[in-house]
Every structure is written in C-alpha cells, then in structure tokens.
Length: 294
Image 1 (cartoon, rainbow, N blue to C red):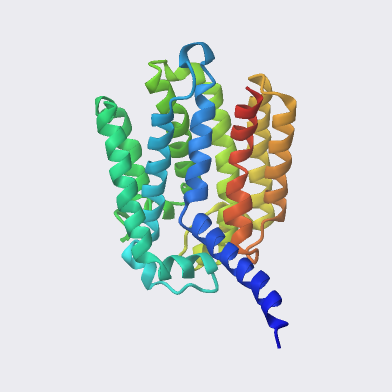
Image 2 (image 1 turned 180 degrees about the vertical axis):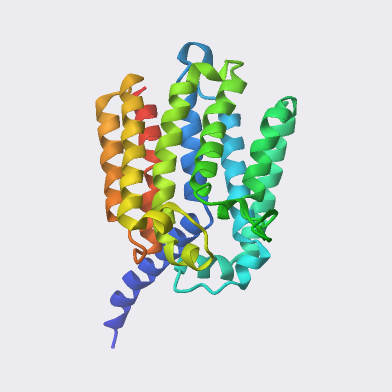
C-alpha cells in the first residue's frame, strides 16, 4: 500500500522543475539574462577603460529587456488570439497578470537606473530605440490601406530586432564609458548578424501564423530551406567578423556549432522549449565564453 509514495515524489519533482522552467523561459527571464550577459561582455571591448563590468548598466539592460518583452506578451489583442497548440502562448495567457506585474517591477528598476545614472542625457539617441522596441507589435503603421505593426512590414521584422538588440547591448556600454561607438563597430556588426540569423529561426516557428496574417518573413517568401540558407549566411558573416576581430577560435567554433545546429534543426513543429531554451540560449554562448576567457 505504501509503494506509490516513492513514485509520486520524483513525479512531483519533475512537475515542479517543469513549472520553474516554464516561468523562466516564458516570462523572458532567460532572454533578459542573455541580453545582460552580452552587455557585460561588451564592456570587455575596452578593458583598459572599463575597470571591470558596470553592473548597473547590465542591470538596466536586464530590466529593460524584461519590460519590453513582457509588455509585448500582455498586449490585449494577443490574448484574444487562440494559443493554437503553443504551450508558450497558453502559459502567457494564463499568467497575464503576473507578466504585467513583472513588467511593472522591471519598469521601476529600469527607471531607477535610467534616472539615477543620468541616462536621460542620452535621450535623443536612446528614444528612437525605445520607441521601436515598444511599438514593434502595435498596429500603428498604415500600409496598403490597413494599420499594421512594424513587425508586419515585409522582411523588416528580423532587422528591427537585431538592430535594437545590438545597439543596446553594445551602444550602452560605449556610452557609459564615453567611448565612440565606431570603436566597437566590428562587435556591433558581428552581433547584429548573429541575432538576425537567430530571428529567422523564430520566423520559421511562426511560419503558419505569419502566412495567415500575410506577414512576409524570410520563411514565407523563400520557404523554410531558403530561410535556413539566409540564416546560415548571416551566421557565416558573424563568424567571419569575429575572426577578423581576433575572437578566440574556440569561442567562435562553439558559437557557430550551436547556432548552426539550431538553424538546421528549426521546424515549425518543434516544441516551445527548442526555441525558448536552445535558440535563445545560443545568445548566451559567445558572451559567457568571452567573460570566462577573460
């Protein structure tokens, strides 16, 4: 009669682990961690001037990333859409209030660092990036007689994400150190190409939805095979730029292998964990290796 207890305990443990994993991945904490790690690694571009990584800037990027992605997740019209078999979307719909609260806390933290550290002095440079990040999903642009979000403009989606992501994770360290951004142009371009390659992976995930909405992404226009080829081309460009910058071959090789595997294995039917854990996790690989190596 006592035999079910030992069986129930591991099952409960697995269930708890699954719940924690869902919370970390689907609340964008994992992705915000990747942005923070890349920001920390960017400070090492100026080792003589940095005096170490500026933790306050890293915290600002972490909080701002949480804010932007969770605001996007709780948009009213997104919660009127069916989950369509997506565990991620279903989880976000069930936890909408918690995500809104997390976005509110992230806004307070980001505001504290933004105002306390004088980032408002750079508002003319930062405001366009902030606006792009916040209105990315809002249908504010009139195109072909309808109001559409910026993400719906043909082939623009990935370039917007890669541009804003790279500008923040490279540009903010440059501003904090009062260094001209041109000194990190190679790093900026390398990161842009890597992020763009990975955004195409998520376009493959969203193929049916984008096709139904007439959103012309790379997979919609070129097919999955063509989109993979474009993603691999941007990945090759990122690795070439890294080699020219003198990035250690081990780090480049591991990043290339991880990213290429994700690109080649990407299919619409893959689980949410493939995209949220592995595809987003590729962004952590070069940053963590660089930080460990230093």
